[in-house]
Length: 208
Image 1 (cartoon, rainbow, N blue to C red):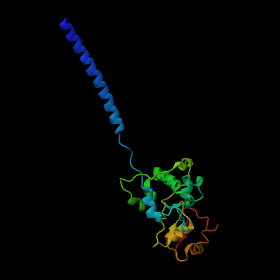
Image 2 (cartoon, helix red, strand yellow):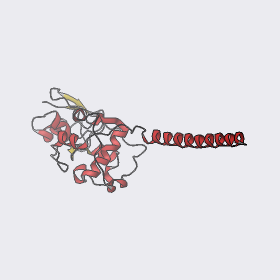
Image 3 (spheres, helix red, strand yellow):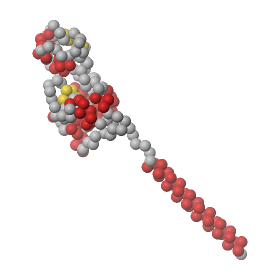
Image 4 (cartoon, helix red, strand yellow):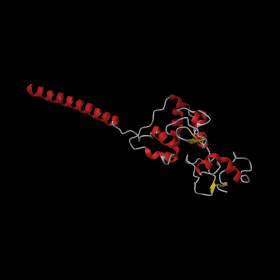
């Protein structure tokens, strides 16, 4: 009889141990799931804006780039910004960041080749409120876009128009004496449809 009781005690103890091990195993798996690493941090939009525009989210200096992140009109439209406002400087900070996030998902930080360097691996994405949920889907056949900074070389005598260029931006970045009007006067024959109709591939004279 005592032997029978001892056998039952051992079986009971084994059952308890198995249950405990099962619970611990589940807990361990749960801990492993909760400890899964998060995705890579996003850019620090406040720091990029501080570099691009001194943190002025509604700036428009007439150089062809608008808002805190200095987004040109073609890029703003290509990434759904016109659903918020005609230009970036007329949109809210949150809306500009929402468009910036779309640009980053498509092209990385190459759109801000200089100011993106101010971000670090510890940066976190700036919070965006619920109004950003209204961003339009990016068109499947959007026009080709360039980096947000014009490639016009201040030392060059000519400039080949790229997608997204506008005459005022080229004049500003190439430091054309006399500005946009002078640049147009130099290229009236090429720009036969007027100063607002420049096409990729056209070569513009920057100096007389």
